[in-house]
Image 1: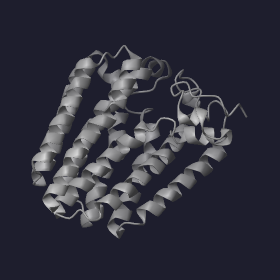
Image 2: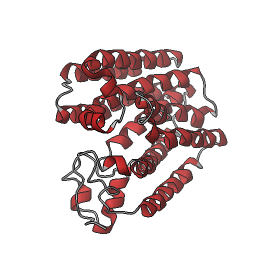
Image 3: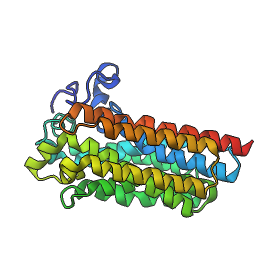
Image 4: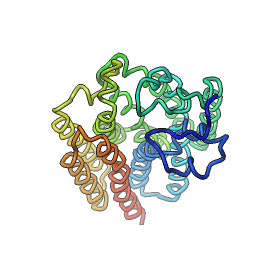
Length: 310
């Protein structure tokens, strides 16, 4: 087995490299705790829906607990999903410059060890899920099918980002499942808006690997859109803002939520204006900045929920 202290090429100088025990570093890297941006992006639709549903219910007394549980669940389940992704992609990752230093292709952990770690993370996620009502538990479990098939999509379709959107936006349904024990039209429209957002930001992310992906036959919307990426982002980011706006209107949201949506929209517009697809470092920074775009919308929804419950 290779040196467990070896760093991942696209994630250096983080706390895992400097502070974590050496034995734990490959596992923390498998679950992406060295770069938790994906966990934050998975979490944002969870928090949006929790806040919007609480506002619609005019009741925020359980919202702080739900926010904390969603936070824990998002981080451990994203970790489990990334571990599964690395297991299925271990041979492909070895052919891409940015990913060949990940724990599995570099030999820092074995496939059996990664599988055991994935199960452990999933069990923690199950404990979190069991804190909610039965409908929410079943809704959460249903997402696992999408998570399971996602790693294979880039081998067979130019649109793997749609499947990622279905998985990463699932939290837009969970807040309603937890609060009301059902999924209504407002939740579904919010889910659709979140999917459009994911397609946009993951297209930006995929431009980092477009050249390597072309060499090994991996498909993505970045390769599909190519020079037309800006126009595609206008479409998908525009759809995201419009659909989320419809969800806010359907949920009778008040002015703080609309201010949050306006800030979210302005952030997405700035990404489109700044993007240069030939600059991988800029693509990475713009992708990472979506955490702040999501947080702006959540802040507005949280203030709206507090206002409506007052």
